[in-house]
Amino acid sequence: MPQWEEASLTDQQRRWFASVREGLERETGRGLDAWVEIARACPETKHRARLAWMKANHGLGQNRASVVLARAFPGEEPVASTEDDPLWSDPAARNVFEAVSAAATTLEGVLVGRRKGFTAFSRRYQFAAARPLKSGAVRLALAVATDADPRLVPHDGTTGSERLKSMLGLASPEAVDESVAALIRQAWASS
Image (tube, rainbow, N blue to C red; front, side):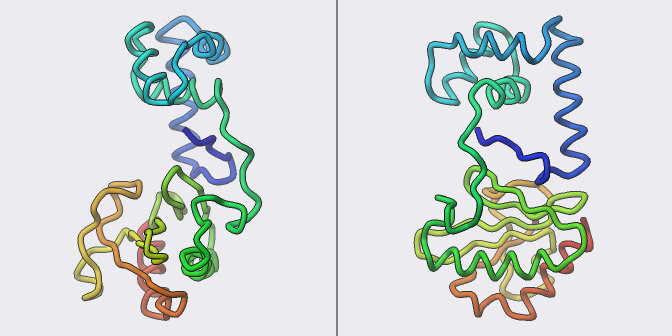
């Protein structure tokens, strides 16, 4: 599970993580540090197996166990740029992503957060997500209805928030034109 960088979290996400930590101590009698020590004794080495172990042996649900495991087994240091990011290692997809990112980050208050298989764009809520495809293209999911543009198709649920309703494929940086920037602005305005 990736470490969530504080700077990439919305206020709502920060409050949620805080409530999970507070509830963990209140409802189990153990604080996060105590649970981290328990997690480090887990014989499993994969995240999903560790989640199952935490539930089977200690009764922790997925959300609480994920928070504990993220602290117990921190991921690699955050990457400095998309050039260093294995998610965006394909140069063609990275170029498309950088065009999407440039369009999104000109908007006020945008937070860019790296997730396991995609990069999220949020303000108060997530409004867009970019996911690399094997073809070198990028799938852009947006918090706009499919009727906002004829190129949009229903979101398949693979990139984050349930607020994302539609998506489109972008094969080149040039595909991130003014009409795509307008869709990004529309999604941002709803967040």
